[in-house]
Each structure stands twice: as structure tokens, then as C-alpha cells.
Image (tube, rainbow, N blue to C red):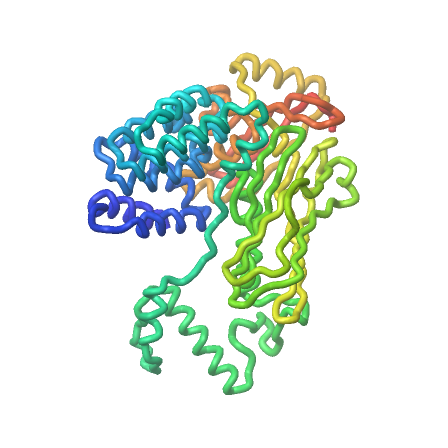
Length: 480
């Protein structure tokens, strides 16, 4: 859906004077709720700020998106944190009071996302502490005070990423669909697009199946005379699609610190995490997507027996209890403190239990917390990298190697850059030009555990698009 970002950004740029704030609010909501859009939206937002002319609504959208997801493109060319700040500054002076207010919040979020430009961000905030407008002055003073506190615990909490907005159908679309009369004419195309018409066909198929007392088509297996349901231990195609989508969400959260973990019919689970090895804090957001309230909510994290001594997860202190009930479109959250005692192999399990319409439900989700989240990037020279790489290879202290199937490399032109983003998101600093093969990716990181302390990790990723394979090799000074 990258076309949506292109069209809407062009719309607010050309016709922003003729539309209200609800339009750019909706653009932000769509981007927040679709992880696939966030990386592309950041690139478009930065391009919009670098353009000679930027409309006020486009400035608001671009500032908001970069403040939330600017870290996704921080390793891309011409998208470094300093480039994002300069582009934002270039448009702040010409913006309205409300646009500058959004931009100031983005500057505050930059301090939390990019500590390396904290000094420059503080200069921007200091300049607006004497603004004549009370709103701008208050924001600048508060953000400046938060950023200069001795304790760094409050800043990440205040400027944590916004959770995704719950999905809901447009009010206009609902009104249009109510006015559509059902018909048996196959040529009739209901206004609203392919998804609406697909749902309409499925509903009609369901009604036909009920009338004929035969199982719906969506529940048929390959075997011609058998059906499978949840009670039989099988899964419908819709459930299989949801499981596949959840796996994609989990994989994405392995190299990003915020996003959706699970998106079902009744609940949506979002995660936001911040790590300061060997510790970290993970926030779990539970949203009620159904039309009925849910009760008896409990959220717990359980570590596998093989990892319970290496990883400690406890509910953070100083937060209130979960609500007794959660109304439709409501949201509850709970934070967990994570401590890496030693290298662990198995991610913990997130257990969510609730009751809806008198029926208890338990969902167990694998929590995206791995040893990679306790690695900090560190930059070294090309000569130092291969010198240490050879030393670790000769000493055979600690090496792991795996060959992954990556068939998309041969068909997706952006796959190599995606691999670079994954390695960078896993905590490694990319060393440019270190490998004779331009597509190969090398990086360096420092892992930290409570028992072993800090130890170096080197990674080398060798994609082979012609064969659809990628070899990943990691060498570390810790044998575990």
C-alpha cells in the first residue's frame, strides 16, 4: 500500500488549504497501524521536508512520522539522524504555530531516539523556550527540562512510541454499504473495493452453506469428505492466514523495537521495547477489537525451563493493576523489566487470558526478546574487522553458521537493503566497504550479559540471489 502514502502526501501538499486536520490525522493512523508502510513512509516524509516547498499539513505528517519511526531509516544514505533534524529545522520557521508544536515534539523524540544529536536538539528547544506563543514556550521548556534531568529513566517513558490505533471501518463506508441492496446479479459490484466485495461473497457463500446444511467452502480440506474445525484440532484458512501474519509480525519485531505482535478478531497485541544491555523494558499493549467488553484480564510472561536462569522477566514496579474490564476499542498496558543474566536460546512466552461473553480465552504468544536485543553497535575500521575476524576464526572460540533459504533475493530489488536494515536492527554497526563482494554485509556489536559482561560479536552475511540462499556467520569472543 505504498501508493496510499504517495497519493495522500501529494494530496495534502496540493490541497492542504481546503481540508481539515482530520485528514492528516487519518494518514498518521493508517501508517501507525500498518508496519509495512512505516519504512516507506519515513523515506517519503524526509523527501517532503527536503523539498523546496512543504505545505503545513505535509509538515505535520512528516514530522510525526519521523518522530515515531525515524530510526528505521537512520542507516540509509542521506537519512542519518542529523539529516532528519536539519530537514525538520529548515521548515519549522515557516510553519504555523500548530505545525511548529508538532515539530517540537518530534525534536523531543529525536533526543530519545538518537542520543548522538542530543546537543543539537537541545539547542533547538532552547531557542523556543523564549517563544512568544505560550504553547510553543511550554512545550520547549518541558522537553528541555526532561532531556536535562540526571536520571534517564523518565525520558524513554514520556517519549515512547505511540501504540497502533485499533482498526475500524470508515463511517462513510458503513453508511454507503447499508444503502446497498443485496442482489443475485453477479455483475453487481458493491462500492468499496475488492475487500468489501470479497467479504460480501463469503457472507453469501456462508448463507448458502447454512441453508443446504453443508459445511462452508472455507472449512473444506483437501480430503473430499472431511471437514476440520478448531474443536477438531485443525484450522480454517482464515486462521492459517492469521497465524502466518503473526509469524511475520514476530519476525519484524526481532529487529525493530515496536509494532504489532498479534492481530486477531477479538484482541490486538502491540509491543514497545527499550534496551540498555544487560537490561531492558518491554511494554505490552492489549486492545479490544470486538464489540463486547472483556473481563478477568491477566498478562504474564513465562520463560522456558532451559532459559529461566539466563533470562529474568518481571513485571515493572510502580504501575497500577490492569483494569477489571476493557470496553470495545479500549486499551490496557503493562510493562515488564527484562534482565539478560547469560546467553539464552529460547524466547519467553507471553500469556494473555481474558473472558468474553462468559467464555474464557487464553492466548500464548512467543515474545520477541532474544540475545540480539542485548547487543550494542560499535564501529571499527575495515582493517580491524578482518584482523579480528581472522583471529576469532583461528582461535575457534565461538562461531555459529547457518544457511538460510531466501528465494525473494532474486525477485526483489530492495532485498539486499532490507537485509542491511535487519542486521543493523539486530544491534550491529554496519562496516561499509569491508567486503570485496558489494552485496555482502558485515557488522560489529558488543553483547552484554550480567554474568559474562561485555564481549565482542562479528557478523558476516553473504547473500546469493542466483541460488536463493544466504549464509550467516557470527563469531564472538564468548564461547557460548
